[in-house]
Image (tube, rainbow, N blue to C red; front, side, top):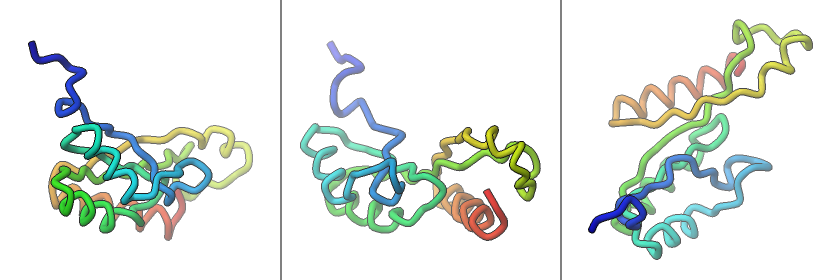
Length: 121
């Protein structure tokens, strides 16, 4: 009987690497090696507010026959993204995990992450 707990049937879809400051400690090669050792065939990284590890993760996964899923944990603006009033900042703790389904999806993540970095949130 094939169960959901079979390692090849499970993929972590919300992993932080050392590029998620104060939240992630996984070094990408170590993460991919552990995924492979556990018999998983895919894994996603969703670092906070950036895609800095995307290329390294993609290349490391491909070298190890692991399917890379590229993602991004976006910050949700409490109102308009340019509103930085102190009264709204307490509401800014929410995140949205976004995963790219294909190359166009990854390009969209890059645009969002870049715009958020340059213009706020």
